[in-house]
Amino acid sequence: MFGLIHILRKERPAPLKKFKTMLAAFFDTPGGPEKLYVKEVLKPKLKEGEVLIQVQASALNRADLLQRQGKYPPPKGASELLGLEAAGIIAGSGPGCAGRWKSGDSVMALMAGGANAEYAAVPEAYVMPIPEGLTPTQAASIPEGWLTAFQLLHFVGKVQKGETVLIHAGASGVGTAAIQLARLAGAIPIVTVGVKEKLQMTAKLGAAAGFNYKEEDFSEKVLEFTNGTGADIILDCIGGSNWEKNVKCLNTDGRWILYGLLSTGEIQGDLLSKMLRKRGNLLCSLLRSRTHKYKEELVAAFTKEALPYFSPNEQLQLQPIVDSIYPLQKIADAHRRMEQNLNTGKIVINHNA
Image 1 (cartoon, rainbow, N blue to C red):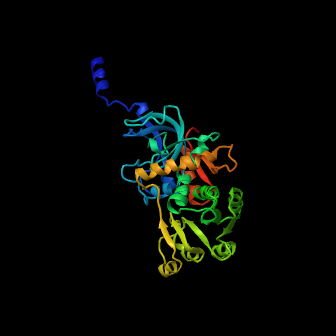
Image 2: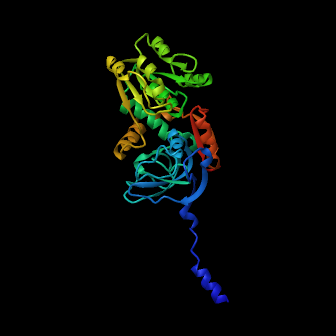
């Protein structure tokens, strides 16, 4: 009998070793926040030039909601897991790394997916040091939102000192970053929001003016603020529902930068002739699907030109705005909060809770 038991034990499949697995936010089929749960999955294997981060905190983005709904799949080769930004500790390096980071370094990183997990693999070129004085939950709110805002203003919009920048969804993660980065560039940020209390927050961050689009015609207010010239740059994550007002308050030769479609992508009306009369530029931009080289250059530029201003010693200090913090087990509640547009700033996931 002992021999039979011994044989049976040998024939049982060996369980996955603990160190090969991790917990991650997961969904089996697309749908609402109720589809989300925390699942044990395999830890990522490091590819050429990647480092492993033990994630302490990650943050939510609209792209996560769209991916959960089945509307925005990750780019080819990226992790299927949710999450585009994280902060944590370097836990290992893959082959071909240049040695920029060593185990134990506190870092934050831009990702194409996989941040809402205990561990994440990321190209070492997408990793940045956590600014002095910031916690992991604060740092996790920086990479995707701030790099998006920096990209829109500098890489796409070519913002110049003295220009007026109209920022839709001014109290969002990208919006609060864009206000501060526009000021850093010497531009004049103005915003639209849908709640009075959010106007107060954007003003504290440096918005020169703010308009509640639910209560007033923002295009008229922009023209009034600019003495009839209009905005030189419009950062627009809303889309079709705003197109006529955007064109109306766009300056001649202005840049209207579309980076999201919170309303609709459909246009009803004569957009092209109105843009033509203003010699307007309609520019469209996404970050997640950009090339490796583009992201590497973006991270390098942001690290050099913006990251030092997160230091408390700077006169114009940049501040990541954290709206709320949820434990990983409550990520469905975090998604609900963003879907209801309740957040001012970033919603962060604490992986140590």
